[in-house]
Image (tube, rainbow, N blue to C red; front, side):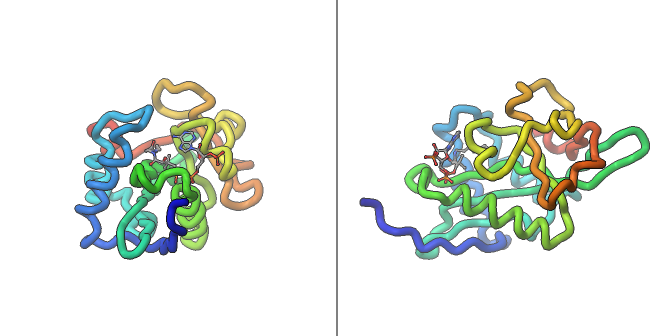
Length: 181
Ligand SMILES: CC(C)(COP(=O)(O)OP(=O)(O)OC[C@H]1O[C@@H](n2cnc3c(N)ncnc32)[C@H](O)[C@@H]1OP(=O)(O)O)[C@@H](O)C(=O)NCCC(=O)NCCS
């Protein structure tokens, strides 16, 4: 039986940056979909205008960082209209702590924090078997498209408040850094 986790979810601090980058590398080392650059993406996003420090969160167990999640600012653009949203990328859990609810707790905590900051939606390119557990639905059902080719089942969005995407549609505009990585 693995020991019971005593998880603390908190905002990431600059002193955590190095440990978080190492954690991301370890988490993705065996992941099905990876490019080996996930830790650099986080590093670059932290230095970009899209970074919201309160939405870079970590999970700690016995003072060890075991998980991390980052939500950054994006826009959903439709003609002259632009709506603020967030992109979840990435979420990472140390291999030996995976499948013990850490990722789920980070996602829920990040959603809660985003709501308190006034955000009403999050988009993700991710696994169709994982994110729907937390309420994500195919983005095309909201009329939201991604600016790259990807299977529709992996392009998802969530409303953080009831019907918050009812009057929102268009293409997601990511910070350039996502594509420069
Ligand atoms: C994906 C990840 C963040 C999930 O965190 P976690 O703490 O392991 O997951 P949880 O314990 O909250 O949830 C476990 C459930 O999710 C499922 N799951 C975990 N990782 C999954 C994945 N990559 N794809 C599909 N389902 C997954 C498990 O099978 C389990 O399902 P069950 O509840 O039906 O048994 C973690 O496995 C990880 O860091 N993976 C490597 C990096 C990665 O691929 N990140 C996602 C891309 S942004």
